[in-house]
Length: 111
Image (cartoon, rainbow, N blue to C red; front, side, top):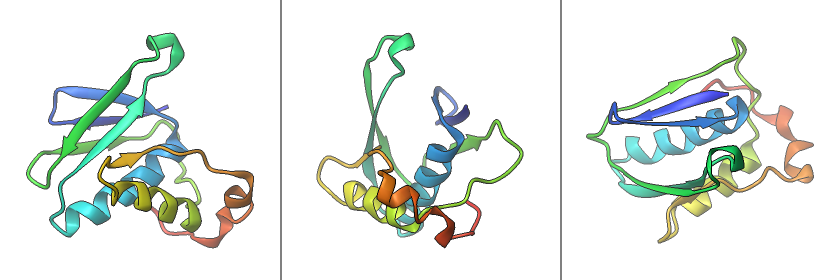
C-alpha cells in the first residue's frame, strides 16, 4: 500500500498501482494550473467512509510507494480517470476493467 499525503495533514492509503495512475492524472491537472475535487472511499476495514479534498497547485502533495518497482501504467485507465477529473464532481477512482488491464503494457513511463 502506498500513501498519498495532502497538505502534510491528511494521509490516505492506496494500492501502489492505483496511486501511480492517480499521480499521473493529478500531476497533469496541477501542471496546467487546474484545481479540482478528488473523492475516494476508505477501505471497509477503516470504516468504509468517503473522503473529498480540493486539489490546488499551491497545496503540497506527496506520494510514497510501498514497492520498489514502478507499476506499468495503463494509458486507457489514465484517460478514464482523467475524464472523471474533468467532470464537475472531480477525480474519482474507477476500477481498471479487464479490457483496460489487458492493455496495461502499452505505457512504460514512470509516474
